[in-house]
Length: 98
Image (cartoon, rainbow, N blue to C red; front, side):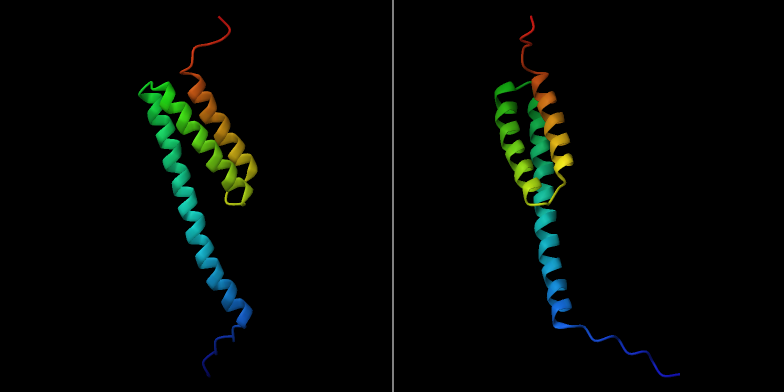
């Protein structure tokens, strides 16, 4: 039996494959950066450093919103992460209800 030949790839398919590799690397980099930011906020909260926690929270929120805007993470995921981090940082701050 004759061997099956591989299908010819169009120029556009090859270009899409190249673009996909680059985008995957960029998205992975951004997601890793977000994870690092989350850990920094959690560490600041664990150290009970409210000033540093607030500062890192602000940076993390900005990065999460930017990633969601660019489609790297879903909007609902971004919203959920921001909400959880904010709630965590607010647990450090004195309650205004008292």
